[in-house]
Length: 116
Image (cartoon, rainbow, N blue to C red):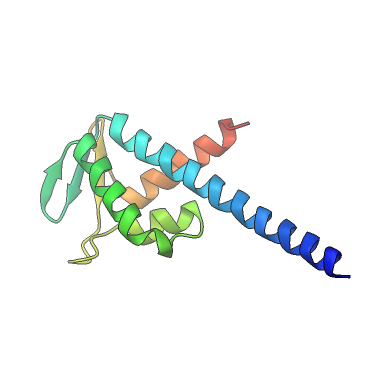
């Protein structure tokens, strides 16, 4: 009976690890996507290039990762607004400005459609 319980526990833990690994892979993809986008990010009244925006989001992910159970949580909880001012982040690409959350959710959807 104890072996069965240990086996079941190991399955649960490995399933959790898989979900965490997937989330981290997707977040890392989004961070690379931001960095290579060449877009301008608007945060707290200032414009930032894509490399600076990616660095900022990496910092928020390192510090706030405990609040991220899914990639959607990363976007919605860490990458859409300032934790200091509550002001929404926006992104301008090719002359079009979008809320960062909308832009990142689209990128995540595209990534999931193309990922094996």
